[in-house]
Length: 96
Image (cartoon, rainbow, N blue to C red; front, side, top):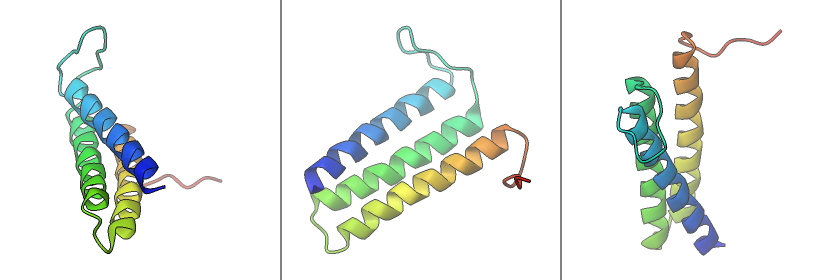
């Protein structure tokens, strides 16, 4: 289970770094995204959080599972805040 989680976190981190580079304005091959600096920052922070969680799993730290789960929760929180900021809202909208 640890190896599966490690591979998943590394793949997610790589995808977030790839998205951050694209949103910074660098087209990679046929892949290109519009230049959105806040999205690039959020995606880079998500990638860093996931890479730290993966490093904790590799190091077999005592609290590796806690760090890995925290990294994934942190990623989800940053993504939701980033999407709300992109839509022009500073906080999540309440559904009615």
